[in-house]
Length: 526
Figure 1 (cartoon, helix red, strand yellow):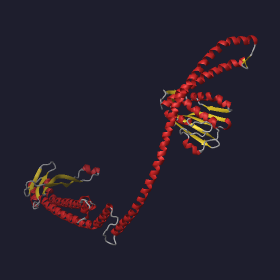
Figure 2 (cartoon, helix red, strand yellow):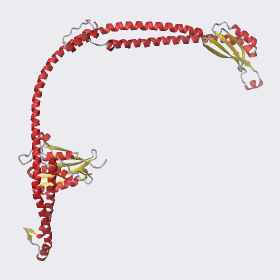
Figure 3 (cartoon, one colour):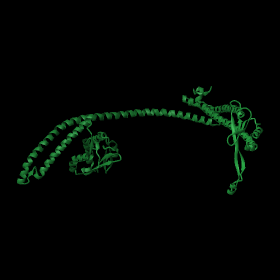
Figure 4 (cartoon, rainbow, N blue to C red):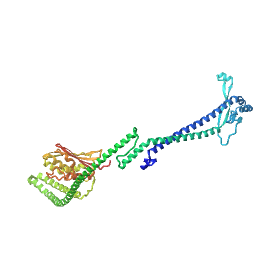
């Protein structure tokens, strides 16, 4: 039985059928094209032959009818017409004068019903020799051609049509026989060509069912032998691959078990980290409550002291004007007067900042968002953060240099949270500097290409180890754990910057310093 039917493949879905269909259609098109061309050519040839006969009759008639036509001698014209009416295909001859009047006509056989004709017309000319004095004086040619009439000859095409019908039938029959024989020969040839491939396909089906040692018969010495050898090599490689896959599967199962154990450890670490963050949130809430109470007392006391100092200033000024400068708490009154006012302002500003920081910590621990402001000027935020750290920098012999251009556009966000970010970065820069000495550069700029406001904090410290860079913004990771670092400053800073739709990154060279860069989107429309 045909292996195609054994394998469940239908004949019209096989390559043999598609090739046979293509070959049959192509041979039909070629046969039809040549048959049509031959028939049309024969039809044109027959019509041209009929027209040539009409022109020969016209040529003979023009020679004899020229003088009777010139004299409009009807009997002579009829006699000339009768001399050429012996053609079987001739239907009618009509002779006209130059004005279209019929001077003579003759009729041949009667036209059959439904028959078709063709008409050939030619003009009749005569030479006119006109010797006039004017033409002689002007040098004109006295020999002129004059049109004296025209002749119509109507020919019957019935015989041509009959010949063409016979030709059509013969051509169609020959073309059909040629196409049928070509298709049969093509089918036999294609079957002979594709039979080895069907055997090869049956062997491949055996391999597909799991038999990796199929029995494939082939004709030695042709391409089929090479294909069968290739299939057998493929079956051998599949056997080897199956063994290899079995080994790989065992290795994969072992590695997946190890990976599951590692993933379990990571999940436990994340759970522990989450528990620590939850505990941190509770601790922050408790600290906020414990700090707000003494901070409020300090703020109230500062207001009371400022009012008392303001009330005492007129008396102290009178005393100074009367007795001269005097010492107050170890300082001359002229200096103490301003120092006390400055101290009161610092206390007021610092207590207000403590209140805002506690509020931000509570909001962060509770997962709340503060109301954003679309017109936050990053220069003012940076100056506010630096003003808090000026005393610390001066105390540790640190120098903070700033570069704040006036053309920096505003950003959309919360000023206090962004100030907290810059405080963390500048404080880390002071702690990274050796012996709390050196220079810290804080600069702002605007990148028009990305439409981002960028703040850069650069120190001259010892730098960051490249192995620590990937974990720099992880929670509870710090290179200063022994010095009291919590590992939350950069983590919280990254969280705030991400909430503002920006990015924070770090670049560091060991022994030369580090640069932390904060990029925030500009709030102005493009």
